[in-house]
Image (cartoon, rainbow, N blue to C red; front, side, top):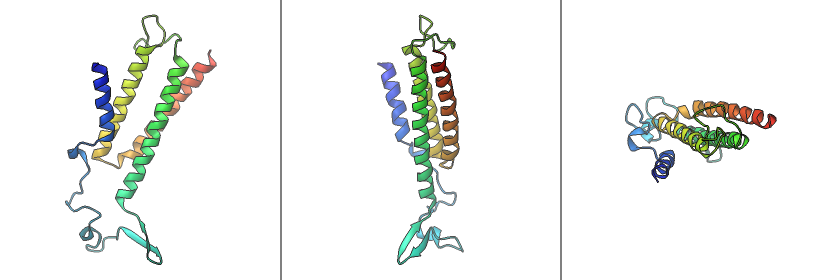
Length: 160
């Protein structure tokens, strides 16, 4: 029961940024406010391109785009982790922390791997709530780790 509660709290942390962690502009004026966009030679947050249509080019939109790409990298990381788990299931495990009582990879190893990945993703999310510019860098890190897990899974499947 304790593990279920911990997992639920981790999942909640993925979707909710604590109020104090949101990025704040340094001057206290939101970037999308009229006073911020028209003050002293600042670039307007939109560009007109044809007959009254506008193309929004705001920092908020760029941050949302980076966040969507980060979520895709988390999906890739989860899929690679699942592939690695599938390729290792029931086979002898070299990592003593992931071994079951029989020396093979089993449910204990899955719980540890899932917990580590969940904690890593929650940590990334909390950091990005404070500084949304980190989403892009963390996406690259997630894709690199997913590539490594996929390589390990391919090795495991070939050695069967």
